[in-house]
Image 1 (tube, one colour):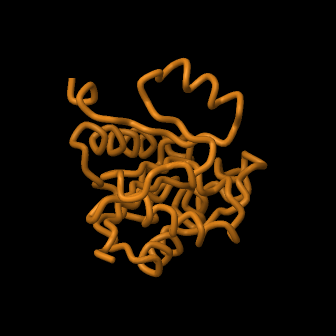
Image 2: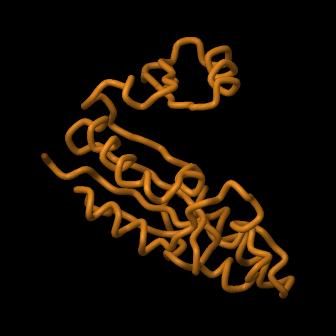
Length: 177
């Protein structure tokens, strides 16, 4: 009901995925290029498991576009694999972040926090999605870790500290221009 009264737009560079998205979301504005999206129009941008697929040399432009697109005080939610996080420390070369050959920019939560700060954002919250990809070696601890992930989802708050899971989760607000 809440979403029915809100506008949701999307950006998709894959022609096939854009066609499917337009079929599935006929009332949404969907863009193939970020330059088509209107400035100062969005209260929230979600970027969930996207930036790891972008070359690092493109990141400055991405953060600049986010600032352009957001309304004053707008917020970005970023989720991306956390290089150096507990999941990678435990699994080493078998870590889930290394599974996908299109992951070209794997960085730490500290790197992403710094990127936000450098591009005119205040980091409001940072945490992790937890260790959700067992086994990690101890059956009981694996179940307890999954319970923490579930609790975080149920309460809708970042309870798991940054660096202690598989992914970095960062919420940042754009500073006034």
